[in-house]
View 1 (cartoon, rainbow, N blue to C red):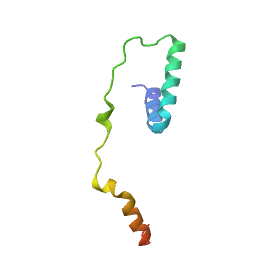
View 2 (cartoon, helix red, strand yellow):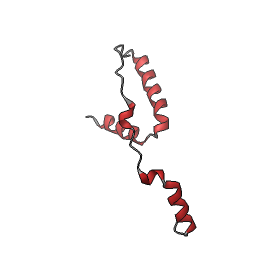
View 3 (cartoon, rainbow, N blue to C red):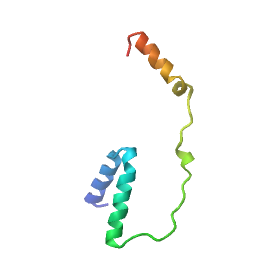
View 4 (tube, rainbow, N blue to C red):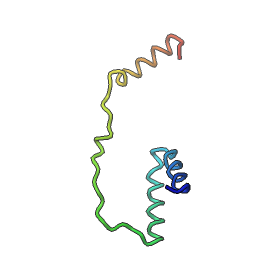
Length: 74
C-alpha cells in the first residue's frame, strides 16, 4: 500500500459518521470525472448486522446519570 493511500485511509477514519455521505458523493464525483464509474450492480448489505443489542445499563443510563448528578459525583 502506498503512503498516499495510507494517509487517505487514516483521514477517512477520522471523518465523523454523519459526514461520510458527503465524502462518498465527492469520491463518486471524482470517479465520474475520471470516467471510471462502476456500472456493476451494487451489493446490498444488511445493516441490521451492525446494530448492537441494547443492554440493561444502556436502558438505565438516564437514571444512572441523574444519580451521579444528585450525589455530586458527576
